[in-house]
Amino acid sequence: MVDPNFDFLKSKFHISKEVYIILQNLASKRKLRAGENIVKQGGKSKKIAFLVTGLMRAYSTLESGKQITKNIFTPINFVGAFSSLIKDKPSLLCYEALVDSVVFEVDFNQFIEISKTNIEVSNFYNRILEYVFVMYEKKQLETMALDGTQRYLSLKKQIPNIDNLIPQYQIASYLNISPVQLSRIRKKIY
Image (cartoon, rainbow, N blue to C red):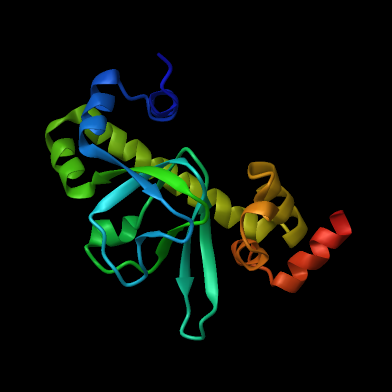
């Protein structure tokens, strides 16, 4: 039987079936409705999520009320307040389902405890951290090196129907441009 979650974890993180079974035993499936959060800005979570269907974002709301979207997560991806979990501090970001989504949540502390005694789980954790670092570095480089049109086209390549899924202001925020700029870019392209 084909299991896309195992196939992804095996191909990206080289996990064995045994480690996958450990993760399955730790994980609980959760269905999120659009707009539902797994952790709020200023809140704390003890869980890390693995997004299997849907679309999520990490964003911060400034004192002015303006929202800044730091990341948009597509399946299959890890989602959660990593900094908050690692430092045991309130989250600087809110993690929200943009559309109805399904995640598997794992208690971070249980996962860490197992990683202390199981080298395969520890190696898996190290590879997750490497993966997250590489993804954030890629996003940062795109923001610095590409203009707004190029960033929009890159996002459209990753999520072809993004314009039909979430509001324009969220797309613009993620691209680090204004909604007016996004409107002009879209008009120019189409």
